[in-house]
Image 1 (spheres, rainbow, N blue to C red):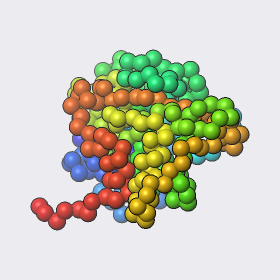
Image 2 (image 1 turned 90 degrees about the vertical axis):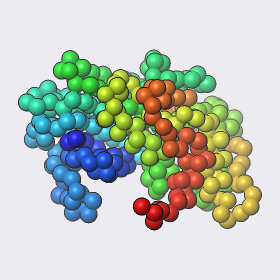
Image 3 (image 1 turned 60 degrees about the vertical axis):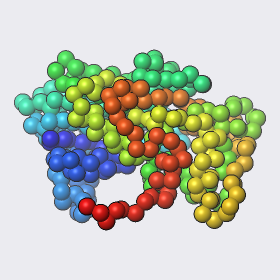
Length: 327
């Protein structure tokens, strides 16, 4: 299987490329920094195409003859304060890259059979304790609107006879990267605390839900979406056991401090939501509110999670087992 991947040099993309190689596939990675990427050792095993997926260009010709396309492009949501310009980048990077991928598929002489399109559980908006499977309607806040437009931009491939799977990704747990890259140094400095979740000026108790997933499992779900003919429509890319923020903070505190102290280092109250909004701006709303998403579609398709529970997932991130010498 020849698979073109946009966003293939990011947190998820790199590991998906590795999985495709391990299963005998041939990745084609579109990158704005192709020359730099080609100098990396791992890139010797796959094709790299120069191009910016957010703009039309010669890179689109690489879609012709591919069996599948995976679109993972999107400006970092949590990388900086949400000014008007940053919000435009968050939205436009996702929608324009998808528009260009769809246009490339439409004009290809030998079209791919499947498009795996990234989205996020932010699609549902903040919904309190409501359990959200893939049939739940979209929310109305900024991220929900962006996700809806992102997904809608990919819908035109349906009329082209291309199978389309939309993977709504949760908080990805990966060693030294993603959300844990930001959280780990803070939790190592002192006791873990809940982050928001109660609104107003009251001390936060972390009651908002967090839909998380281990990096191995989100790669597994994306690969399943590529290879399983029954995988189409929205698929929640989350673990089957979402947790409240306070429980996540406690579990992270435990796994970080347990090697150094026999007690659990965790405080039950954190900074108020209004304080976080004052410091972080509008992006704080994406932190202090959450979704209780469940991966009903992935389970129905037969996906077996390697890390279904948070404690085991965090242990695998921070204390991975050494590779076996057997076989």
